[in-house]
Length: 262
Image (cartoon, rainbow, N blue to C red; front, side, top):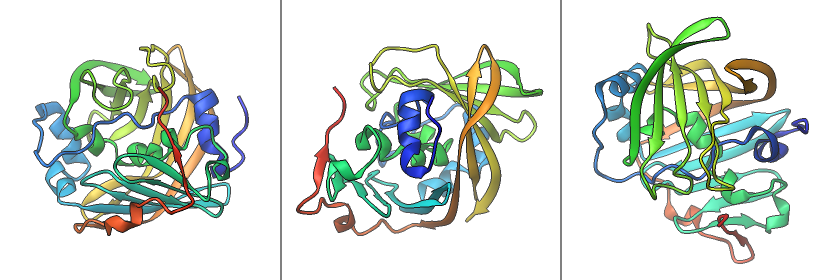
């Protein structure tokens, strides 16, 4: 697998080697979904779904190896905007666009990447969206620690990759997410038993909600954690109840659309 050199190449590494998650979650609706009690406990451990559900926008800086992106997300309709030094990616609710052109983005798929780190950063809250199914699995041991496990999967036709699965590895005392195991089916649409591992670190409280300041991806095989593959960090998090100006997500005149993989 190619070495991750900077944040502009992280998505490419994830696409070709780590196989990360992407545009597959259901879009958020105005109606609050019902959650099983064991998943409600996880949401409560991270600040609570009611507090999360009041928010209209999220903005943060994503950093890796000295490179920075600013990401803005409308939490009600899930439109998003990513600004980097050499490119801007936007999702206007219907299509993903890249400015000044698709060639400016160095990864394989801006459509795959545009909400990738938002979903990772905002789990478990994004897994509280409608259309997600939950089940408790047996406890497991990973890297010398014991964890409770909840698996999340998606209903038929939900999101871009309904075959994906997520396993939340939780501290059994605090119910806080410490590891995320996940599969990827975005590129072939087929179920997979190959899980990847993501470590959640350095939680910090913002307006009563907990978010990680750092995520580290690891090799994962036969139930064992291998060497670290990449690390990204988050800073300057802003949470607001008001939704962003919708004009921010509109495609500029000379931008190009990056279509979803079919």
